[in-house]
Amino acid sequence: MTCSHCETICPKQAIKNREIDAEKCDNCGLCTAICPTGAIHSDTDYDNALTAVQNLEPQVLMCQKAAPDSLPCLGALNRRLLWALASQKPLAIDTSRCASCNPAVAKWLEQEIAACNESLQEAGKAPLKLVRVKAAPAPAPSVPRRSFFRSLFTAAKEGATEIAAAQVEHRYAFDPVIWLAKQEPPVKPAALFPGLALKSPCNSCGLCTMLCPEKALTLTKPSDKAPANLQFSPIKCTACGLCTGNCPQQSLKLLPSFQGTTTFPLDGQQP
Image (cartoon, rainbow, N blue to C red; front, top):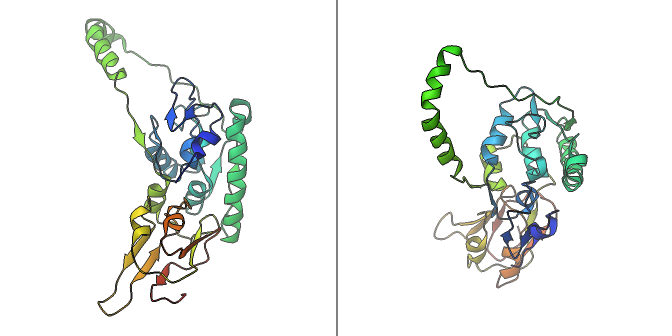
């Protein structure tokens, strides 16, 4: 499969031939949001950052301009991640600074929020609430007087430790699909997720299950005499097209939205 989603969406043109130019990259996260296989590595731990959002009361998504310990940028969010968070409890998001900071991120979030709200409405859930969070000032470090002189003697040692720690570059692999699967959303997959159909008989070769980067397809066989079933997980599917494009029988067809079918009996008949 030839994929250039990340290269196309990057507002800084920092990606070429699947290589990232660190000097141009501003860590907006748009490439992470759009990658169908979770192939992007960055220095942001999105997994823990999103988990931290879930623990907030109320649940609010914001960038580091509003809170220093938040996401560096909201560009890594997509409609599925927003839906998973908002389907569990009401979600607010602060995009008030996006247009002035990074217009490409503002445009991306506008469409993703709209698509998420449409599916939330169909499920009877509250839509995302747009808010503006007052920026929190960075806390000033306080040094007790009694430890002042002690710090003088340890400054050299601590300084060397901090410098050494700064040289360690942490890289995180974040696959939105894996994070979604762990959430076990309480509502059924919405129109945000693709569907699958069998358009011709399948011979159960299993190639699609081996090619799927997110393991959205699995073959099961209830018994030796029973026909095999193809199991489809819409939450794991990113519509990358590897299964449909490489099926020897041309049996599979991706649908723009999930139609409710997750099990396909492979006996030569349509389910």
